[in-house]
Image (cartoon, rainbow, N blue to C red):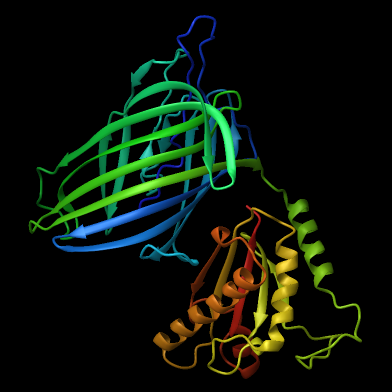
Length: 416
């Protein structure tokens, strides 16, 4: 079953047929070095026969324009997926990530090289050449791309759009007022040549999509969307798999940070971590002038706080009581950057069984995440966790000192 990262761009806009209202021209208006972030929240249901599984997904899609002209913009894109099983609350677990590089024309058409899996919805939506009025409808070709264990299936679709005028939208504590577009399209695929298919790839796919998109025609960018998707997959052995998605997605636009701006944030973080008053209690019994349970470094993603394994007892995932002051300090810093993505990752050294290390790394990451959310009231929807076991060492596992460096929990403040 593919990972559904629902198309970064369900957006459009067009106006009213009432007397005195001007037609609306829909097109992308973004510029170079602009960032568009889409956060999607999915209610997902899978069914095979009498068995069913429910889960919730969160997808974070980051689009960064690298070069723009009058025709369109080249986009560097990053897709991160997160999951939690069952209809529940609590943190999301980091699942997969994809990268892509493609062009979005001003009219919404995509140009994507074959090497990229994402985006899986392409040229969707595409805007008509002429301005529109309320009640106008149009159809333009688009494409859905599925990836089944390395086999790519592309399906041509033809969405039908209707422009409904300007309307208010609301999601959680955010609201907006934008051009409202409804759309629907059927999906059908029937593979006639079955000679070179893998067992997990379907012979038939059918279903439908329908939704509402709120697009700010003045800014030339989307604001919010609601989508319902339904798929039925018929495998080669006759197995029928069904999947349905109820999706809400909110867009945020900002300028991309340059290197100088990122360095300034890192400098500010380091200043905030400096212990100036050595007379304060020191429960970790560190030499406060030279030692700290927290170190800071930068990466392509942002600023990383690395928490030393001294914050945990040996082979235990429960935070020590004295470690809470370190987490408190980090939470104070993170709150200075509201709306930013925060990722908590657990890591171990290479000693012991891999299965055990994997579980321990996950449990330690969750302990830190719960401290941030439950005690320090960080926004849960922006925080995720993942355990990596010994897969990402920061030093060779050849000495006690280096192994200690690898036993850590990292909190990443994502700057893009």
